[in-house]
Image (cartoon, rainbow, N blue to C red; front, top):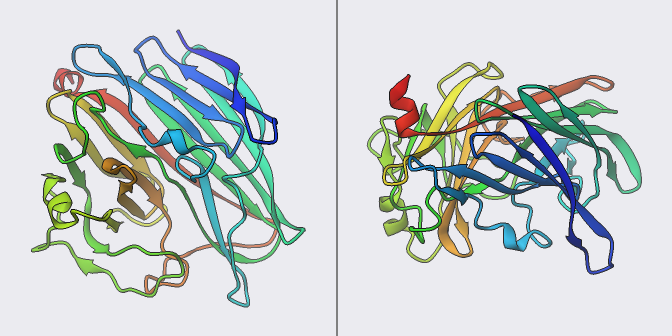
Length: 309
């Protein structure tokens, strides 16, 4: 049975209320999304013994951070970089319930310096197969290159592990860019083979933590699949708990990064477009009046469930 609950989550310092939308199924998966920033507040999922845990440990900073909220960069014809303030905006919400899925859809205008640049619709749908489909539809009022995504930080065993060192990551990519800094980016991609960033056959994250003892790490991987084509890009698993996240997307890159505070406590898994004016040329172009949709699917399962198939 699918279910959706709507409750007041809390208030901003100005006393304006924040509403939470709780999407859940009978398998123990529950996703809560706020109308403030259209951000994920929490994702809960069971382990192989059916113990439920909250997998987003960084969400206590919801009023200050952009974690779990959609982001958008626009590059205009004159190379002006625009970043609408989506994480600290109230979004209008609608909910939908079906037999095998529930969803909450948010929308807000794209405003920059009091000018409306378009509109963005952000939809979160949870189904009975523990799949969370995230669709962000962007309509531009002027010709633009764009990049969008979402920044959720996961720890698959928050009750037992203070870091993500025991997490095993597999990424379907042979090229990457690091370090990942604020856009715009001008760095050229390199090959992962022979580097500590090689997760093409699966590897734990402990060696990256050891090489970054006092700072967060990050990288952007260029998927082996064709750009803008729907396909698997990677997965993350924790052997002891058995929890697994599988990622499918129409986006060409996967951003990973460890949580900077508390350090290395969670891992960001964010399918994204290419850097806006980096050396990779497959930027997303959106003509005036047209729209582009970023689609990603997070599947929350366990190793035991995977062995049954």
